[in-house]
Image (cartoon, rainbow, N blue to C red):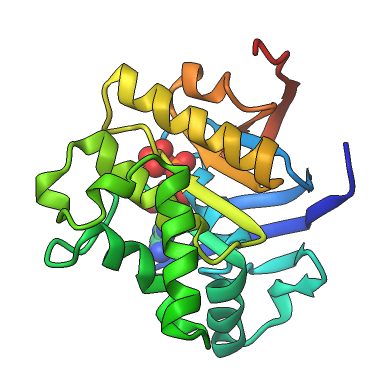
Amino acid sequence: MSRAIVQVRDLHKSFTRGTEAIHVLRDLTLDVGQAEFLALMGPSGSGKTTLLNLIAGLDQPTDGSITVGENVISEMSESELARWRTRHVGFVFQFYYLLPVLTAYENVELPLLLLNLTKEQRRKQVETALDLVGLTNRMDHRPGQLSGGQQQRVGIARAMVTDPTLIVADEPTGDLDTKSADEILNLMEILRAQLGKTIIMVTHDPKAAGRAQRVLHLEKGQLVHDTAVVMSH
Ligand SMILES: Nc1ncnc2c1ncn2[C@@H]1O[C@H](COP(=O)(O)OP(=O)(O)OP(=O)(O)O)[C@@H](O)[C@H]1O
């Protein structure tokens, strides 16, 4: 594997429910390489989303450390984490979470409004992102005027428009038909191969996971397999 961009060490995450501690992740150690496309699988409740959220800096571990690039994100305060996420993480969700009153262009532009860029710089980046996902001719459409697959392509454009270190995707194809799902997975592959993006995807779908370079299986908060996938294309 090339240099690890994500280093997770002895990670532990528990939540408390009343007086009871629920140990969701235990002693988890893993590396994700620069420009790697990694899939996380496992039964419902095994801790996939919890792990993804920790790596994306949406939550803090109970114990252990997480380093992404040069940053030990497990030591950051909440406000430092929020700033770090804006710069370094692109998010893709199962249900897209596009704002219905904004056009495709405006939805993709949103993460850039948090950065210190001119309108012209933003325009260039939004146009590049929309071009990559093949939606230049739909940029003035609102989400309601787009198919599910097209909405997810807007979601991908929004995730990569800031040129993030890491793209995290939680069931990105979970709500799509096979053809649209394939298009989204093709885009992920382009992000990885052409733009060198590191992608971590949670999925229940073995076919989607098969498009990743490596599949990790979680069970009861621990890794049980580490499978290198032979690329079929
Ligand atoms: N904020 C929280 N407070 C309490 N418990 C939580 C919290 N977040 C997650 N959990 C618990 O942690 C466990 C793992 O949840 P997680 O969402 O990571 O699983 P998952 O593998 O992604 O499941 P699914 O495939 O169903 O999405 C579950 O038992 C869940 O109830």
